[in-house]
Image (cartoon, rainbow, N blue to C red; front, side, top):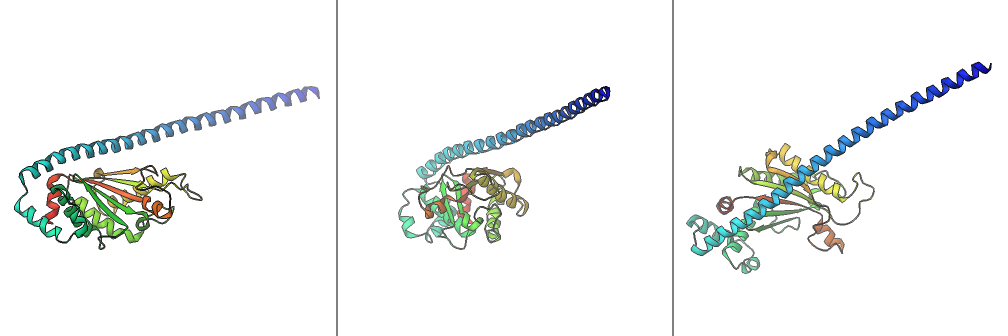
Length: 267
């Protein structure tokens, strides 16, 4: 009887040892897989960040280059007659209050191209949902989340499709044009959402816009960069409902060259 008990105990110890080893191997495998996934994710994030950094470097470089070109153009009035006439025609339609603020040729060019872009992208030139600014030919388009998304969602509203289609036509009109889509949020913490935080929401929203531009409107993916900025680049202080609404936006940054910039006046 005693011998049987000893054998049973040994069998029990051996079985327990085998199960523990199996669990250990499973845990070790999962740990290795998790590390590999983490490294892969970090690698992708670094690659995206490098593209964003390179894009901002291009913005700064292009602004410096175009600033010199614009100074040269202003110095010798080197605009073609067609460009001059097109600019005059366009400026006749610009809000007189905005026109009165133009002090240089560059200011006038910015106003004229901004007006044409607004006309192409929206039926309402002064819509609060769409704001276009130009700084040394770098075009920055802010679109409010009220137009693009439901609260806490990264699914693009179908009502925004016509705007994105017109934007795609602008992008596709110039083969060398590059575009970065930035998602921006306010500083309100996310509650009861499928997103961990505003970082994740801003990235998912910019990616959703990029996917639509590529898959639905045939914009070459090589031209596109998706970037999430969370709440850290606000337009205004997040101190009221109205201001937070302004900060919830998608910003589209377009890099045309100066020749394309001037050609926009004649389209």
